[in-house]
Amino acid sequence: MSQVLDEPTVPFTEVSIESVLLDADLFVKYSSPDKAFQLLRESIDRSPRSINLREKMRDICVKQKNLNEAARQCLALVSLYIGREDFDLAYDRLQEAKLLDPRISVAPGLEAIRRARRPEFAAARDKTPQNVRTDVTFAGNLSYVSVFDAVQVIENSKMTGLLVIKSDLHLANVSFNDGKIVDAECNGKNGVAAFREIIEIGGGTFEFSTADHSFPVVINVSSNTNFLLDVLTELDNERAEQQGLRDVGNEII
Image 1 (cartoon, one colour):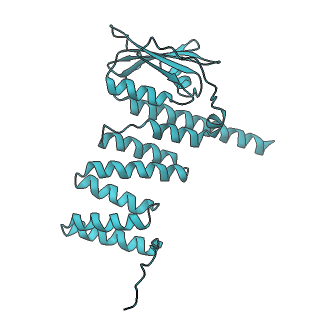
Image 2 (tube, rainbow, N blue to C red; image 1 turned 120 degrees about the vertical axis):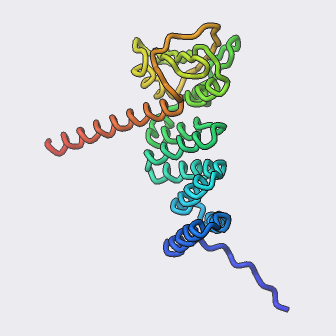
């Protein structure tokens, strides 16, 4: 008897992907969501970088209350959208992943988006060892642990205290009440204006110390994640506008 060799897996074409999406919709329409899920799972295994397949899987999982799988698809889509430099959708899917599964850490995704949008920060990060105090609740080097990571730890632990950030160009702090950001100071600024500068710091050290009292609320946020996303989006939009003005100025010259 002749030996049958397994055929190599071949990624779907756009036409076949459209067919899968249509079939998945039909399965859901006729009350067979499990078949839709299985079809999409097999299709994603063949074409893992297909945004359309993953978006359809995310949509069906949300409607069927399969929130863990929906969150996983959101995180996969974050990476795919970053690769396409579609950062607004990357932000949206990252925020959605956190809403679907609060256990998810968005810090790596936020850092990945920032590095992709501002590659000069990633290139300039100073890996030189720096002295870090050990007589505080926790501390670290911002070249290895981002501001986003530090905020995530404080939020998850619902700690009240002060995060102090030191670099060659900055001396800053962020106040937390029960894990929520309530104020910030940086180089003579405070509140949101200060945090806009803090979020761009890519080097130096941080130290967090707990406090036995609450801090005055200057920044009122319902979610640290939403606040971080809003600040990053505002900064990126401002830079895009400035670049547009420079381009117009160059054309006039």
